[in-house]
Length: 326
Image 1 (cartoon, one colour):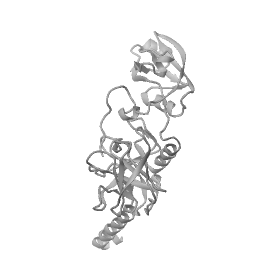
Image 2 (cartoon, rainbow, N blue to C red):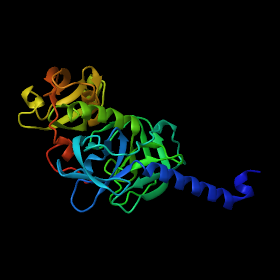
Image 3 (cartoon, rainbow, N blue to C red):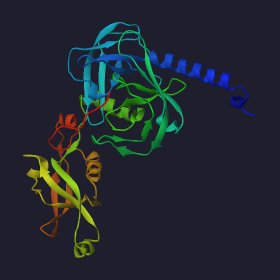
Image 4 (cartoon, rainbow, N blue to C red):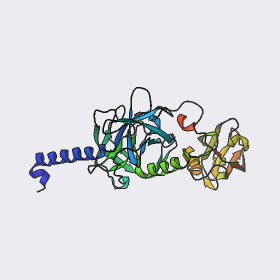
């Protein structure tokens, strides 16, 4: 018979103590980030005086302060932020005795694993949300356009100020940072490996350059069987809008064009084009196969660099983006 069934109260007490120890360990590297009006958010001391938090919670470029686990409030400099992936990087001003997080690997998480979000909003000590991993999946792209190596969602409640909290396992290891802005239904974690990739780019250039077309597209289905049979497909991507002076407009794409493929890869949904841009550096050319006026043709487009504020509106279209939690 298992130890759990023999003495459940002792086992539950041991689990409770272990989770408390995990919070204590993780809290040594968790700080409060004062980078917006009124409410602080949470950040993680990743290493070497570098603090990682969510980009959506960093609302100003200067005058940023951080409350350390000791209760001391110190100044920090914004290294850079990437609204698309929802990662911001700060550097503490001066030297401070602050433990770095113990970084884990999100690939080891499974549905049912107990996890914690450890927050710090002021000098009063850590705050915690408790839950379980609800799902783990493969690569995915958020509605903001961010590309992630794996989807990790949990039943954690992200209370106000919990944006940027570490996802902590029962051993105190940090598997990523939590964002409420990537999903409207679940707490979603930006895996540690993605955080590493983004902060390396932010350290190098202060931002993450991404390809940009300046074209709004939506999936469209061909209404007649003749067209479907002739093209060997059901539809493509209809261009419904072009940014004035954007790469697509300058290259001669037109509203009403139907995009069939990009560099020989068929496209069916807008994220297919985003995937192609993720692999294409600004300044490179890509070949679009189009249906224009019922005639199949090709067109070469020089990819531009996405405006740095595009991520503030989700990088799609001209209207305001959907809101973020945390």
